[in-house]
Image 1 (tube, one colour):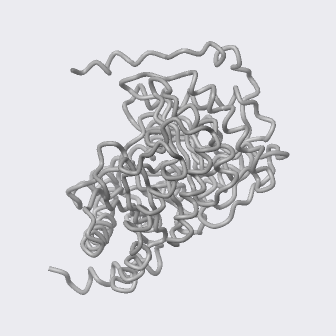
Image 2 (cartoon, rainbow, N blue to C red):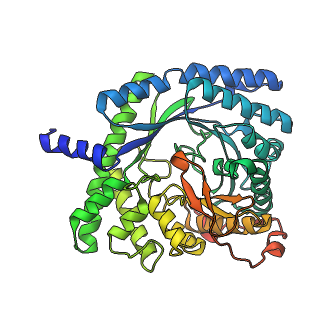
Length: 452
């Protein structure tokens, strides 16, 4: 039974603690759009997106007014384009990206994900051509997001793809240099990518998903931070209980929106992703949750342990609130999108090496990190390989979204605006890994992948 205290608490979460539904993402399968003619394929894609998502933005607006809960983003994710683009050439894949962008613009959504390839074990012709097209596609579109999965616990790491993605990121940065390499903010390299992720830039509608599905991503770092502060100087067992109870309440809000959006749109409800996704706004920071636990600054000793407890407690609380939890679910640590992370990186308390350690216990990985523009492609590939190895060995999703900002060096600041925020350019190790990356081939899957 809902009582007055519950209603007032929810109002406080929304008005004072930045609680929101970060995204309602509609996943759409494009397998039935396949054609050997690129023009017809693009027409089929556009028509299907317009038909299925015509009411997405208006429905989300209705739900915002009905419940008083902000829904920050309305997004689409589609079948990995390399799987439906077939033998289209590089120019054909760029044309497909522009079609996705046109549909997103006409629908009024924020981003569309799925300009993607899954190459953890090898590259198809379509994947090869899509990867060639990524830099130009991201430079010539505004709302299209791309991702490439280069490894998995079952397959190991495709080091040829890892090496290639270092070069793709550099080319993307060069083609969007006039916008501080903004194209790289729309490109993520995964290990163990998931089929139902509603968050960008890595969202796509996996091959095991239905024809159309609604996935919702909730957020509430400010709510959790306030709860931790109210808990005072309690021990970690009590603190974990506090976070679990708070995550339960946050996730229930997401499930409510997911069910109602599903019903109104006539689309099956998929999952709630209960990730704590921060923003650059003050009071909406994962890093500040960690400092509210007693750390002097994010990145100092104890940071990884604090993040591990936070991530675990969020998941335990969230799974009790929803029958279908999925996506990435946990705590995100994107540097440019988190006011506390920005501050810690600017002061030197937070380094890339410490961030890498933190990614072993949280959702995703090295996210929205600006690095010097003269960082080599091989060094970027080495960063990708290290992060992918953490995901492969631990059986978890990890990712890299780095921005080598042209003309910028350590200490400079890169401004993206909006949810993408701003970030200081962080130091990268000068030690070369070129010979290591140049070996190519595959790093075999770990022994514990043999579970059958």
